[in-house]
Length: 135
Ligand SMILES: [Zn+2]
Image 1 (cartoon, protein in one colour):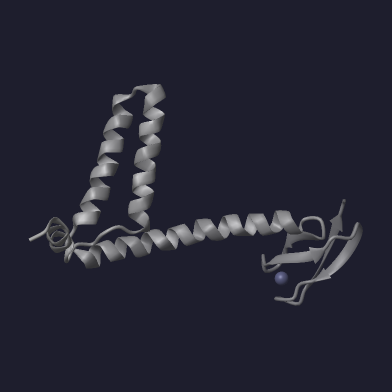
Image 2: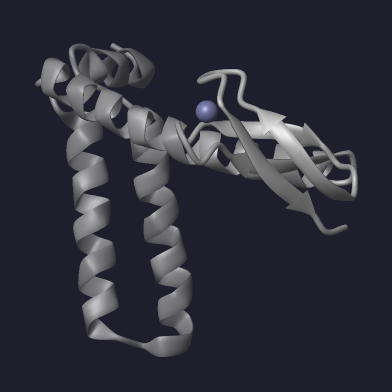
């Protein structure tokens, strides 16, 4: 038998690498890079624990549990991604639009940027409120 076949046979039925594993490896590398300058035993131990978790996840045969962990991580990761996408969109549109919350229903509103006092009708709750755009 050749080596590649044996490796493929070894990995059969094991979980493998996913996004969470890439994140753990990234954190491990960042901590190792940081430890070049700090020389801390605690950071070394934390980095080794993170590496051990990543290796354990890759070789684990409990695929259902690993998939549940990956789902939780991806839900959390999607929230962070959405947060930064929203900020990026707001910065890009900040010249033409201003962003306010409705004081009644707390809905986020994107309004055209025109200086002065305005009466705004919220499209969700249909209530009017006054606001001022300074610049
Ligand atoms: Zn409203």
